Image 1: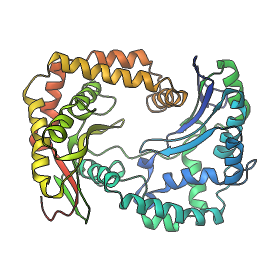
Image 2: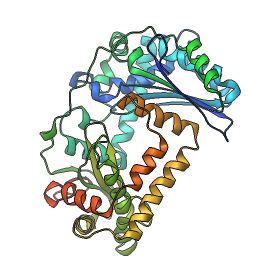
Image 3: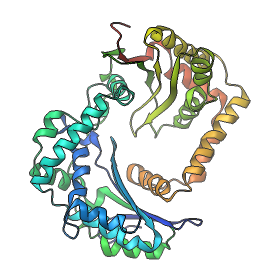
Image 4: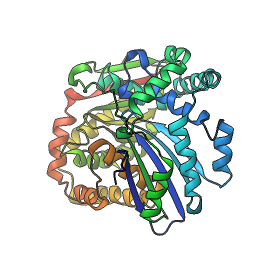
Length: 408
């Protein structure tokens, strides 16, 4: 539904739950940032919780939601940011009241900004000290290059230390606009009641976004490897390549291939690299999916002395999936795993609100769950073989490493 103000609202009643999730999604991810604003989207996300008109402090926000046993949180991705409150359905109006106050009337008090700098600098340091996190970002920089899609969301220490009240106001004004936000209400609530709550609480003013992101540039990630020498107990490695974006017809084939390679504990990487060779504790293959770019990669934490062996084992699995057709039984298992994960996830009002909101925000259409399941089902063994040859060709592979390694 589109309100008179232009705000898009998604409502869905779920049976079998007593909860309601109210989620605001905004096309305000880190890809909208230029070099000088790196990290402002994520910092702004923190500041929305620091007080507004009706709930003037972070304590007032917490007390309102804690007082009814609800949960609230937020996240900043590369393409959008999200803010949600999840409560027992009789408290849906309170949830909307708190969320709307934050989103529309946040004050960005300079004293609160200064306190939060310390919090975010420590979050920055935590990621630096956690190679398992850091390695994923290193790999995205390698595969996407020096542009917003290749940068991490936490940003630079410089921005965290210097960003001002006025910077937040102008960034919010340019992106947190009526046409660039979606309110998604999912759970134990009738559509009409959900719509009324949104109309009453979210008084967006009909403004339009004034900031666009620069299109993804294909050829910026030309380096093949990124070695970050650091004293660690194990070496963290990511090996992978560019993928196909979410809008591409082969998107689901890439995802099914990712499950076959390293999506679960019976996958090829897990059985070969961990169970048979004993080279690692964690290993997983996943995809990073965006509207105009993507990556597919395998990450593992391996014995410092056996990094060469581990890389060889990972690349061998890539070679096998390029050269041999996936057996029907293995393909069936991967599809059923993916479909099962989606169906189980969507029992949760929060997951459902996110899925529906994301498709509407990024693609202007709501994708039915059955449609997604049908697209997964349509993937053939030949599709996987074809994209494996294309995406995972030896010359396309890139490697990021963090550990006490001097050279690869």
